[in-house]
Length: 401
Image (tube, rainbow, N blue to C red; front, side):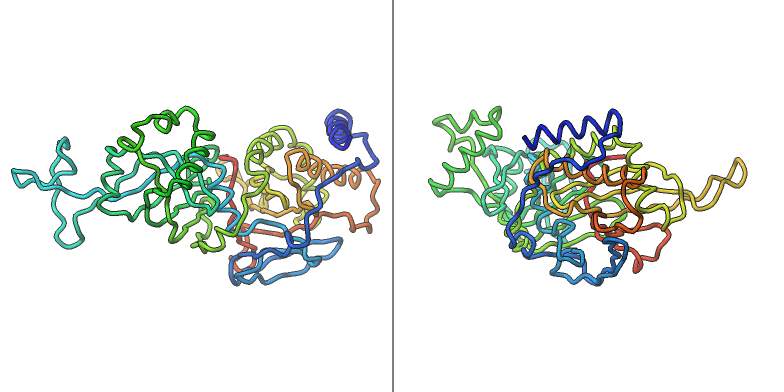
């Protein structure tokens, strides 16, 4: 019943904007410990929050995620961000070290078939970095597990040096604007029969087209299953943002966001079909504060169970001649859902609730003094501000534009 009502409400907003009374929404209520779970945030960061008709500031601490004055979480922790990214992806760049070999002629080569000779490093060692594409899944500890051919170059490399790294980036967000993570550690062959059976079963389920070697009686002769024992984690959320070394313990304790599989699709859909509603949202929530009537390129850049990141730019100086473009500033806000959502349908319902609130305020159905229904918000960054003025918490982008 709740799903049907939500679909009906969304269709009504698309067609006529005449649905005035609020829809019947049944978001999942989480247990209290969901809102008080261990949190990780940037140290010494400044953030401005809006709730109702007033704003206040919060100075973040390293072990606390951003919340509003009611204790409602607005975003994922760094550990949750990394776990979500690693869980949603299926492949990555596996980085090993390629040892040099000295042939009978005294030339240093990477292998007997290598056509090139390489200068031997007498000071820094004999290894060169070597990257290959591998498929992986993660076990209950968040450790990537991968199926490798015993005669592959990376398998020979890790036999000589087990220190490796796995670079992961979602294919839906290519380039430097996308979030990416590097897991650094040591690779270990899985030999425990029970663990090997469980890992093989999960691998077959996730990669049915690659699982044939697991069904072969000669499996152990030609292939091996490995797992990466993580020692450190390096996370980059996008282009031109602060990077983070993330605690391995925080990563292991974290859970992947329930919207990990559907957030990219929802963001693309909203950015494609909700431009008019996004302009209204800017006029209602931010126009008075910023002194603008219209903004350019409004879009959602990231979505999770707590809310979404909303970015737009606006002109601060008019065009001065044909050869001088106007000056633009950019704002990015975190807009919370108030109650965490646990599915694609609940996320759609929560977004509709916000857009309906915007429509009601534009058409006089909400009094100016009635600020209680405003969603919780946080100003994350602005190009016209000093770094200490804006809330510069880095976040991944699920769209490439």
